[in-house]
Image (cartoon, rainbow, N blue to C red; front, top):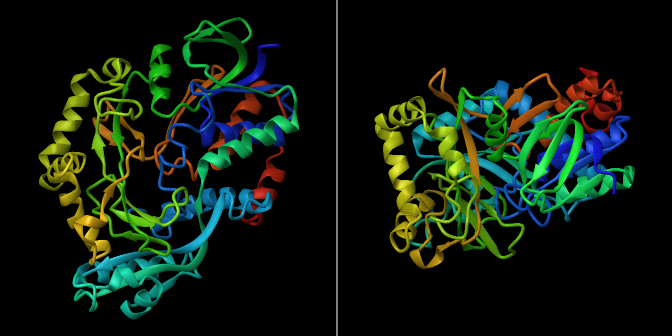
Length: 451
């Protein structure tokens, strides 16, 4: 088998697979390969158990500004349009209700004001009063006694029905399958854990831990938490660090009909607890995520398994510890961190989490809650050592030397085709290839052509 390619993509999650398909469908690049360290594609962050199974378009994510929501909405519609165009309804993409709720007078006032502001971006979004929410999501309004309504005022903003749930694992595999159908020269290499990337006359050699090697004129690294490790091994991104945040979930009975998000504390860079029906485990509602920093680049079976020595090399700097110390000086952040540590503990975690979950579903009892073993994954939060602060959102290291490194924390899955759109333009320009930008947008985001 020929192991020389025009482009090699490192990382077979949804972002890497989206680029694999985009290059095969909309460029004249002759050979593309994707490599992944696992035995199958989408086994880490894009696995159906590892993420929120949500297309984040900004409508119900209360930490987004309206300007960010306008941008994210365009990213989200590309993923949605791809799934609908390829008839993946009820296989990969699912329709359900979705809303963000405010509980109590202060949060209700915030939700009403937010709703009015966001109508510019989402003109068909509805404002739900307490009685309407009771009809759509009765468990949100049912009180702790299981009989009467909860006493607090509750206001919601969202949609009675929307294509908003997605199995990103199956989406990844659909991208990869279509990319290979488009061109038999395109290949997928599994069990290929990249140990080293070396420069050569024509581009780069990628050498696996088992000694296998392939070459590429351009390398795009979409390896989640591992991207920064590979970048720094080549001397790039040395001003950055990585704060890995692991999320976990809890299962409760089938109490929610759709997605219900809550108001997020603006001080916290992590989503507030939310709930939705789990698309991989019918008959159960999944609530979470929790958020705990841990010295790992991916979750293992046990908390102590897979502790990363690579992460020590990346993060053993005074500035990284300074950023963490500054975060912990804030009382609210400190309390949040310690509470989430307890969430991971047997016996105590379930009981403490119940209090947070009852704000969403007041009638929950301790017997209703079960830790979702094997669910959740690590997301890399990038730390800028120069600026001494967390860099929230996506981060890219562009070298202009035929290799680029992407780090895509949540909502990276939602942005997979938008990121592919950006990367395809860079790669095509570098290789003097043609990228049919107009057809890409016509197929997946016609609104941008009209604009």
